[in-house]
Amino acid sequence: SIAGVASYTFYSFAVIVTVPSLRSQMKDPRKTVPATSAAYSICFLLFLPIMLLSYAGFGGYAPENLISGMRIERPAGWWAHQSPFEVGRISSAGALLSFVVVLNLMLTELIYLPCTIFAIDASCPQLFRHGPPWAPKVMRASYVIFRFIAATSIESFVALSTLISSLFCILNNVIFPVLAFHKLGVKQVSVWRKASHTIIVLYGMFVLILGSAASIQKLTASNDKLMQEDALRSGLSEACASAYAAVANATGSS
Image (tube, one colour):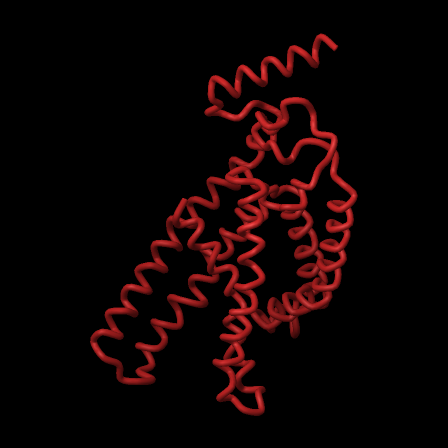
């Protein structure tokens, strides 16, 4: 859906909330905007060929994880399946890239995990810092269990990222900053600027509501999709269905 795609785009810019703290630590704060603009331009130039090559290679059936499409020894008639590029055996290149991704996650977790724990501690210091000794231990154990359940039960990373972006990135990066700007009266702005801010907030609410609904629907339907991976995809043309039947009959007779 359009709202789902729009909300996922905000996920790519979630780190923008760190810009104020980054600006306060820079030797020359005036270089903040050029530096961030250059960083986003570099990311755009890196993501653009990945997107184009993905569509050129997989079309509309591109898997969420492109590594999942790097397979060999595909079965006969694989092109007619519900997830055609995700059948077969993973190739050596795909296995190597998977190892690199896992290694990257292990390294980045060393940064993200303590930051999350510290943020939860700071959100309720009376309980976790000055409360009973068992409270921080239970919180850490519950957090680990929650992460484990989320990692093992949710199949679609894109749907989960879209839900997080719809619920939190929109609020933190769009709605709250605009409302706080006008609430605090930091600067007098023109009527046109106020109108543009109103449009931005309305767009954020649109993504917040419809993007969250679309991502929740996709999360709840992910298991059904996995069960249908080996089934024929809907909408096959008559020629494609006939070709698949011929291949299946030839495979069965051999």
